[in-house]
Image (cartoon, rainbow, N blue to C red):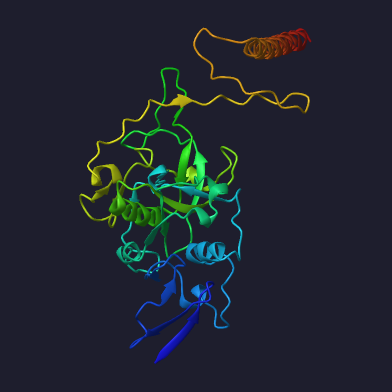
Length: 331
């Protein structure tokens, strides 16, 4: 049986499929055919529609292919070219299968690569005109990345603090929640090392502290490595791209404390101020301390007056009862 599928580049690809378990082929638009790997969550219908028209924003392969044919413009605010080595993991552990139970090793083997061409038009995304960069074409949706300053953690997961008890944060770097896809991209980039490799990613713009998903950040080495396997497996293998290419592990800086936002007064926000240190108080802190001291003094005075009144009332009742007894006795 012969299947005919149309790619955005208008090329017809034929594939004999003796059974329904074989993965469909997809034109990458970069000179090679890329098979849709199992476990990426994509289906043949997601890659190509029956009417020959590509689905909107289905895969990175379709996006790059459409761009090269002049059919689609890249979003300079949303899309960016980054090295897989510049993106870091957000978890300590990933399973060797995707959510549908299929292996991620198949996805690694289906990632293609191609040298950048000045005619590709990636200058707006930071690609120089004369470049020796290589572009990865992955057969799954592009990963989403965000610039984030993560809380530093010890090996046991406890947060790292300075001498004054302030939580320490790392530098602003690129992180992703698509840890399995990033693992696949890093493996493909390691195979091309020392060539400069880039991949098209989708940037998530979030203000610092407002990304709910990154509250679950659990990496203890700032995303430089990740362990692969099931949680009940002892001694999980650790993946670190620097060790794979023969480089020493990165020496990470100590981190720094974030400025604390000022309190709102009169409906207006004040500028951020640094964390408070010992014997280092600003006028705002002194004013707040004086206000709290005034409230405490007022509360103490109220308690003292209340206790005095209760005591006087008890004494008055006691003497009143004695006078009644004496009057009754005299009668």
